[in-house]
Image (cartoon, rainbow, N blue to C red; front, side, top):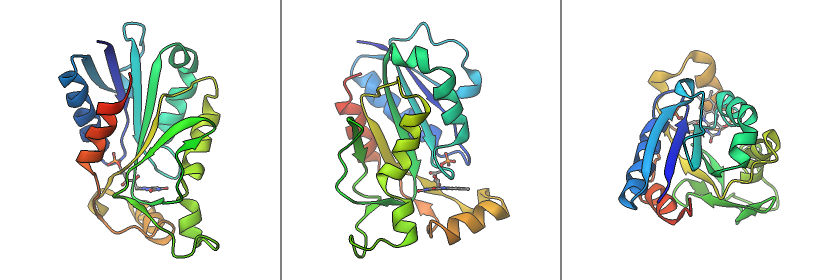
Length: 192
Ligand SMILES: Cc1cc2nc3c(=O)[nH]c(=O)nc-3n(C[C@H](O)[C@H](O)[C@H](O)COP(=O)(O)O)c2cc1C
């Protein structure tokens, strides 16, 4: 039984719903869970464990990178996990990166057309290209798991530059790719 904080940020509003589903699952296991936006957090001393979640926005959301760097000493002294929401993940069989278990949502991850010769967008979306910069940001933090979940892309919520990036570089189609079963399963199995 733990006192768990789920700290999140968002660009367009769908990641907090993922945080809430993780919270519901952890509460069902008898934990006490608080879900908070980073901007509401300035002290994590009351919590046994912290889960940090944010979307991939040209790399993990800058706010999340800043958050784990700022709180690296606190996070390294607690049980901790990270989750990322995203639209594009290349399936390459990755299970760990730098010794950290990586959970990849099987619904969102796509097999590359030719594993020997990845297209630019496939290379961009390799799990290691998402996860390594996150680990580098706060190397002393050893998350129990990093999850790469499908997210939600709503063009109506993006500005013109964001739209161009999403269409040109990651070639994503709008839609809700959140896989609630995978999200619940990850939360169920997390030893936090
Ligand atoms: C400017 C921008 C950049 C993005 N970059 C990536 C990316 O690099 N990889 C990816 O898979 N998804 C990317 N996405 C998609 C988001 O990660 C996805 O839509 C996420 O679920 C959004 O969460 P939110 O609703 O909480 O902001 C990007 C979206 C935007 C608007």
